[in-house]
Length: 359
Image (cartoon, helix red, strand yellow):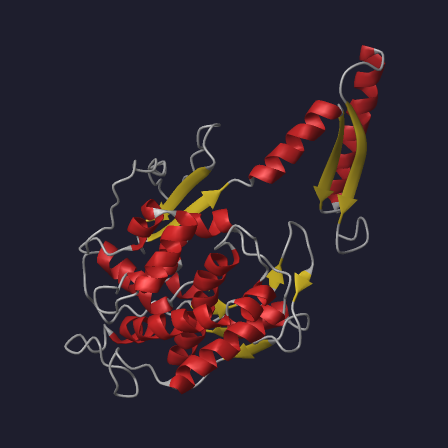
């Protein structure tokens, strides 16, 4: 456990929800386990593989908190606005920032793909603002339940401001809607990936629906059912809750993930599988490793259409330049022996941030 504080977690998640799941996995309730990792709630987009960062000055800043917050901020700046959260309320502030970001990641893919129109996020704010408002009003109480269940188990429905789940203050709704719009308009042409959202639905929409027994979310469930189907809805609901069913032919169940493997050994998955897992039992984290199908298809197309190969060597020191030289010599020797037939290495590139042979 002594290296958990060195973890840097970047993504769409609630730190308090992640801690709860880790404690449940370890079958213990120990508040002394603080899991003081570094958390980053990022607010920028990369809309294509290898694409540039998309953001704007009006975007919410990327929030960072924890042991390595300063190092992470220095890594991201100046291209990305960063706000380091410190002080006695920093943990609650990063939780709230993460919750708002999770709202965006849970709602926008549903509304963009609701009618198979593949609307971009700015169109959603223009044409579906009323439905977005209704979703925010419905789900905001779930955030309070998630943030405060552990601290206030006797009154899980109590809100920060003392009201209950049946009444969501309009100011909180307005703040959430203002945040969602600001983030969307920082990359107005973005269209969230539907398949990726469905793959990650338990850690997005499922986080809010995990307290649906306390905070009913009929509109949220209706939208997931419409866009992704009942199987996806049932993946989100609490295990103790009643699952939704229909009389039509059941949809094909999702293929199970391969079993987890130990963190010190990453086993190669079967060539037909596109998902693998690795876990670290010591802290209870499980990592899902997904193959980039588009990258594989592109790579295969290169192999099918062109026998020429290229090599990139990272590091232009003694070893890197020596490897490059020996590959070139062997290639020349092979071409002489085979008479120019067979695969050829078209280009050898050596990369380094320093001049060649500078150490």
